[in-house]
Every structure is written in C-alpha cells, then in structure tokens.
Figure 1 (cartoon, helix red, strand yellow):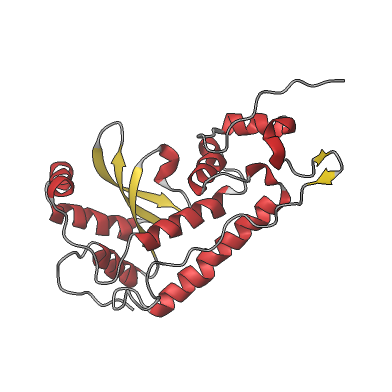
Figure 2: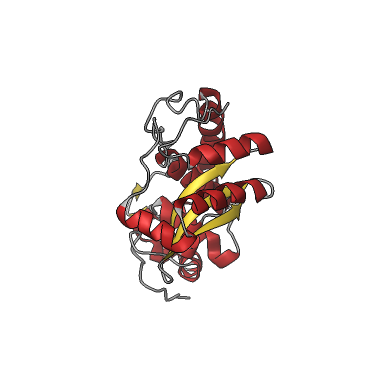
Length: 237
C-alpha cells in the first residue's frame, strides 16, 4: 500500500497548526531530520538538545534596587531554567518540532487557542527571554518622538499610560503578564493582561512586557519601577 504526502514545509516559514497536523500525519514530509529514519546504512543520531538557557544581558545584581539578585536567581536560575528543561524533555519525545525558532514554536503549539503540551513551557521561555531583554541597569530614558506621540495619542498622556499599566498588574488574577501591545491592524497601543504563559505574539501583536509577581505590595512596587523612567528610584526587594 502506498501513501501520498504533501511537500515539505520549510522550517523558516510561518507554520500554522493545520499544517503541523498534516506533517504529523505525514512523517515523510519532515525531510532529513525525521526521527529514526534510515538513509542506506547510515542512521542519523537522535537529537537530545533543542534550546539553551539565555543569560540576562547584565549581572544578576545589576537591577538593584528595582529587582534583587535573589529575585533574578529564583526567576531566571530556577523558573526560567525549569521551563527550558521541561520543554526540551517534551521535544525529546518526538523531534517533529525540531528546527523552529522560538517564535514559530510558540505560535504553532498555541494551536489556535487549543494549546499543545509543549506550549506552556515554550511560551514561558519566550516570555522570560523577552522580559530580561526589556530591562537594563539604570533603566531606560523617557519615551521620545514617535513613541511618546503614540502613547499620548492612545492613552492621553504618558502619565495615563503608567497608571493603566500599574493598575493592570494589580488587577491581574493569579500568575500572568502585563504587556504594552501594538495592535498591527489598528496601529494602536493598548495595555493587555494575559494569564499564565499566554503571550500576545500568538495574535501577531508587537509587545513590551512586565512580569507580575505576588504579593500585591511587591507587585505594585515592581510595576511602578518598570515604568519609572527618568524619575526618583523606587527600591524593590
């Protein structure tokens, strides 16, 4: 019995859940990376590692007094590392998802709102990578030019944006993230809350983020510190 399969989809192209499903049903379309496939007498080795833990672009104590070294040790060294290890363990069971960028992996495993098992860890890895890159020692400068104009247009003022951002962090139930999102179609900035691992890139939005941590008092201080540009320092444990 023979079976006809669709042609291979390049790993560098955007992959949709329907296309991934077709690839799973039709393993011959996966190309030379297919797990366990023989080519003559040669057997390709099983892939045992996929993604590595990225180091923040600063020392772990460099964000003090806004974020302590212990906080970085816990959320980067423990939580972030744990998501990487769990994701690689999932992918080690079947390398059909091997070769995708992290962005592609997050989008395809979101599966149009019906997340695959790999999604939670993949999205949390992306979220944490993005979060560490969103901060720098000494903070950033106040928004200027186009960004300031857009903030004033969409929120009324930069002060109004900061108020909405902090309020979103305080009212987010459970674990999650607060994002400053540029809606591509509307060309409009909005503050968005997502729960657990969900990230706006699954909706093709452009994002800036803030991670929300309990308890409420620390959450409030960290949210204030995150948007505290060009103003007096707000110490955070």
